[in-house]
Image (cartoon, rainbow, N blue to C red; front, side, top):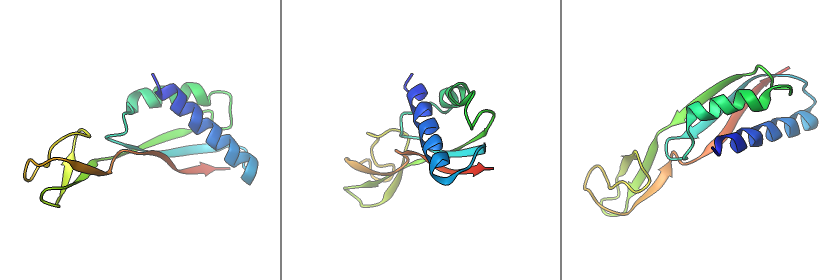
Length: 113
């Protein structure tokens, strides 16, 4: 379950930001998770609550923004939706399709006090 280490990374990011910017409590955390990122959103949310316990983000609201997978077909040049990294183009069936969105995970912002 790599979601636990991802949640620990978010906690470290939050603590670094708190030390740098001087806030003492985090009310909410908004995280983008791409459909192609290989992260189970439900597992990440479960791990987030465990990892944040006892820290400045204890009890913080987690808002997960899901980003759909999108790619550009090298055959027809059109953008195509992707459910998996190695899917063919939905328009022409061509390969390869270069992933252009939906493969990242990042903290978008924090609501702090």
